[in-house]
Length: 359
Image 1 (tube, rainbow, N blue to C red):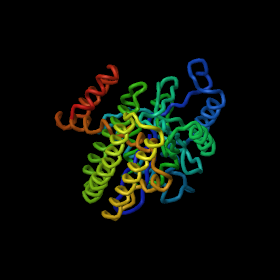
Image 2 (cartoon, helix red, strand yellow):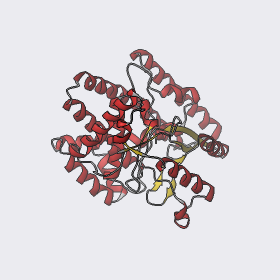
Image 3 (cartoon, rainbow, N blue to C red):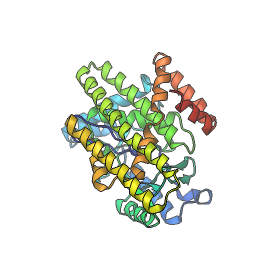
Image 4 (spheres, rainbow, N blue to C red):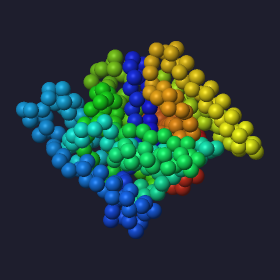
């Protein structure tokens, strides 16, 4: 669910969501969600949609702060680029603005069993099954996470700055997205619009990896177009650092997957699990110290690294290399990438796993 982009100059943890269309009240009979959860989801979505203003109107308003006006002008330009240069959906999403006045729009709960690196799944109408469950109030997310922890799950709760309703609603630009720099903000737009381009039900790993690959390629082209070579170099350096950090986490996940397959007593399994996680924490902090950066993973270490954190990384990145390799083979043809992703989305889960493992 969450995705981290390392920043080699400052702390910049970037929580994000996958395409998250929370189940609504009218879908009660189609969903396993409880009524309370449905009601908070419906109220939260209504709050996000209520009071939106066109970007052009906010930019033109005399009482709009100069800094916000400049940011929204950049957003508007990136939105047009997404349609005309990246071939992403030409609709009303991200053409309006909504100020929520809180740090995140949604808080997502991710969970995995104590001795597994397979995420717990939640199933909803339209989206199918996802590896996270979202709440529009942090307290509600924390209470639900605590209930899972009491049942023996490893859990993590992460704030989300943006999400996509897959085109079912006209998603606005949110003030929660303004915490990031221009490059990261453009990346959010490309990422969330990619979810509207292609979506496979009940396959978070595939969907998030596809959107991440489109985001990365979109940012490369966006920065090159504007001759922002220094920012492009910095972006690529952050990407490289991020991939190295991800590899630390993915190696740990694989170590734990093999460990959990062993027929060990629970106490011994727990002890060995903690040894792997401590080694992983040391490696993450050591990498940050060596490269003089803070990736945001240090917050995971401080809260107690667990299976749910490792699940989060895998959901976003496992299939990205396969998409990027395909795009390279096709000479950067994004339409060919979209067509291949649509074909795979309509195919079986096994076919998608085979594609992801092909690199």
